[in-house]
Image (cartoon, rainbow, N blue to C red; front, side, top):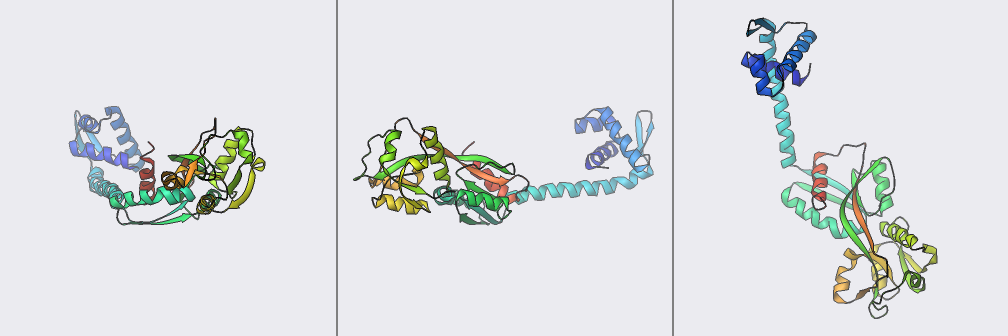
Length: 295
């Protein structure tokens, strides 16, 4: 016995007609008859007496109908409660985010989301991409926002924001003259640490130009975007960073964008989650909110 059978039985009982029940439920009369027959077989009870074109509920049908209605009403209430829970959601969302989206994108999206759902609170853990993905795989987090994809059959990645990477340097030391990829090896380079999404994307783009990290004149490896940007602003060297991270410095002239002939670097930020876990309702709605701009 299932709810679909009970709904069909209740409609036949209420209308006293297989034909009218079929019209009401927008299914064929033979389908109605088949479901009633299966339900009668499962209950080992006859539910309707057929008298010509008239059907009369049996005593068993009279017993079943009010209880079937109670079950169907409970199912409808559950459906309504679930819809209401989506409108009046509450609870904490613990979100892992790599440095760039965690610093420059997520705060604004959280503000937008809380205008719609003020009972939701957030805990945003900022780590590098590799660490965020490990925490999701270890079930320490439901989901995260990362700037690079590490292949795994247990993870689902959904793009939600397009980012651009720039080669930048202090304006009085490194003019905004276009560079060739071969000339990059002469520049003093500052790098993010291994595991950084920015570094991974940079490595992939340079490899496409026939360059490896080992070919660069690397003078320092630093563990955060803020540290790399500060070192560049102090004149220590050049680096590749997200446009989001240097918007202010480019606008006020502290840093220059150094263009590389034939090389334009971009990446997507991804919403990532474990594909064997069901996200709680408030997480699902926040994830939908993140993707609205992309779609």
